[in-house]
Length: 301
Image (cartoon, rainbow, N blue to C red; front, side):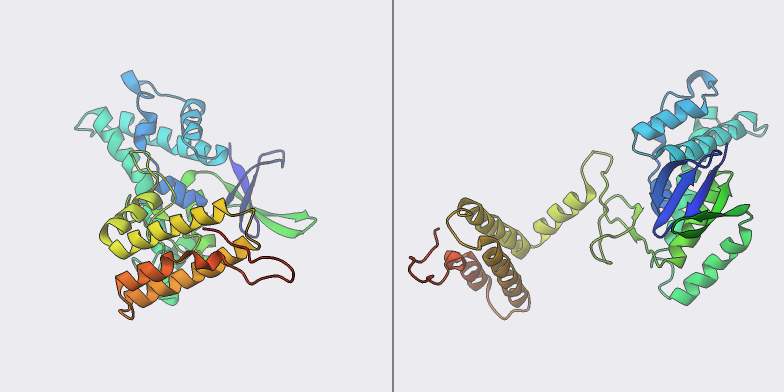
């Protein structure tokens, strides 16, 4: 079985042989997901030299969070690697060891493509294009054109995982999508809030979110960040307690937040001391508003 990948504005829509959309994923989702592939997900599937099945492996991958189509292609590749290991006449070690090494290559292939889309290899867009260009020449995929309400679209026939990864990489490059390497788990991800994000939104082997780990590490190494967070929580609690008796408290809180961020910047630049920062940022007077005609001044602590 193979699917058709139809190029959309921000990713792919996946159609089956009956031209029915069965899945969608954004540009970069395939390479980053396969880059995070963890072979331990499949532990026990190939016990006693069992050949396993595409459906069985796909089900495990879907349970681990992979989309249906991506899990199908990934399962195909896993089974292909298993057959190679079983049929290898020059195999010296155990089947389990050789297969484990082969599974590692799957995520490694995706990692190479992610690396091409990051600044870890090259930072110049022109040089990146020159490196990625050979991939374009290596793609030999049948394509067709679909006429839909929102225009004419290209539909590629995808026979295997490697073709899917390369096509995903090429469209990421075309759309200017860049990858960052997580400083906690070491896997690549697409930054969402700012281009220099250091931690991915995924969870590490212990089940903890990398972004949360990164934030906790930052607080450990930066007393000012820890103090700022403590004050922010206190002021946010004040806002919540007084949400009913202070007019426009959300607007006032946003104003305080910008003020506190500026104070923090001044402290980092040595313009004010940590003690001054704490005193000024902790002041609850930001909740007080001017008297409205005929009314008492609003505000509470």
